[in-house]
Image (cartoon, rainbow, N blue to C red; front, side, top):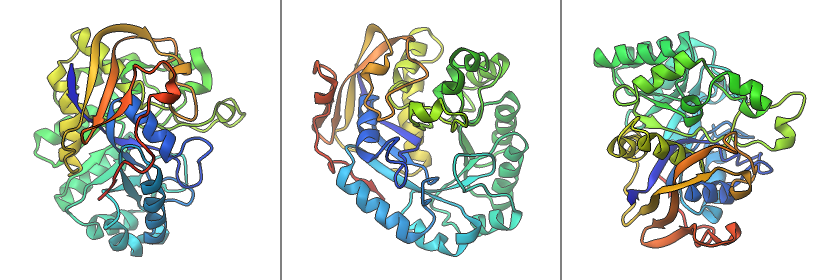
Length: 355
């Protein structure tokens, strides 16, 4: 079975400053292994992607090492608002953090929000980490400025129902959900401890059921929020939130297709068509992946390309495996190689930085 190259609009590649967790080479290798040929990297790095200088240096570093295409998302910072016009040329979107996150980019004042909505180019979307009542804040800004807003990793019943109501009123808003918020609930934290700690935190079964009920209507994208940390960090007394997800998203969703929870056509909308449209991303000619939709296997930490080397879905049985990924006519990933270190077939720098 052939699918178009997948697009993940929410990943954390940890560059700059967190290369012991992930880097551009290992993160894009994980992307290819998961069927993603274009991914967007979030700005809560060290230093964060809030100035033209940091963005330019990060883009240059990416171009030397990426294996698939990567776009950088700029961050909103109250101390760097004057930099917004300069960073816009080097970023595909602006990310505003209204809730607790890993990093220093939380925005808590109205003046900063207004400046972002007034200054950021209307041709590029604003994405928001907004939970609970802050979803209403984002919707109010979308209505006041009549410009698109994309809500990241929606996880609660009340949040998705509010976004659904806003869409019915014609507000220009879109949203994403993550596989871990579709396939895990609060009790998984008791089962695997800090390995299930992320932001937003895992929700109740009622929340998960409501997300699934909106998957064919309100929800626009499946995004991984790939957020790797080392096992030592996750098992420390103060574990950072976040879980890797690039290599497990597609098999989990293909399993849902096999179970009749959504159609393959809808899956393509959620993981290719809508992400490309919402974030105004370029086409990738002659790019596709080949999937075996019949193979049943168990997800294993031992098979991962991500540098962190673990997944909260270790031991979960799925149906559907990526066999081959072709990027612009060149085979970039081949699962037929017996040694996982030989499955990546393109050289560092073969991906493109966008825009």
